[in-house]
Image (tube, rainbow, N blue to C red):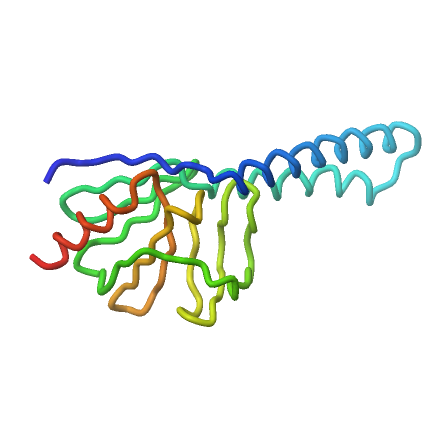
Length: 166
């Protein structure tokens, strides 16, 4: 099997949420800097340091592309990667949000849907989703669940199904 790379595309909601929140972030940082200039306050200085770091964390966690190779699927993030070997996968299927999903910790749209989520239908799962319309669920034999997305989910699902049936 050849290595295949498939980009993770952002859906309209992720683009909109990211744009609005980043604009608010820029305005907030500007306000904090001008406030700090007028009068020094440790709480303003701490907020000025922490707020951008939170957004940087989610940017670094957001997926860039998926790689399918002969041993498994790799989620390439801006910093680091997640590897799921084919022999670990017990199930893969398209994921359709049922709107009972609850974000336990993570981003609910800024740079994607990233973090730990919970759903009444599948339970707890780790999410690296850019577009909910292209999302798919992977369950491992150890009971871990991942919801991922990419530009061509049907290709990914069919390729992985072929690999896990071998």
